[in-house]
Figure (cartoon, rainbow, N blue to C red):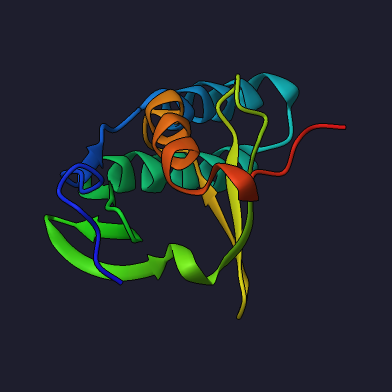
Length: 134
């Protein structure tokens, strides 16, 4: 399938968002006030710092045909749009989780990138596959 030059667009790298890890880090330290002990705080804070690290290292690139996950600028996984069945944002205001389903498997990703920018790009590429809120 050939696309004309007018339909071809440059790949877009979605900018990172540190909002989710920051919220989780604050919530993890608030666990100290619940007198649950130190272990729940340590586990929750460790996971939160892991997400913060991921938000610094991972990037999402959206091309005309693919959803690409990059780590330190190197492509680690490609999800062709032709294999997608559906997609949706859960809890987009928090931010929450990005869900998409391929023919072979479902995927859930924490939103570690700009959700508005990602949604705009997905609406351009695979708008018809968006799961609408009922």
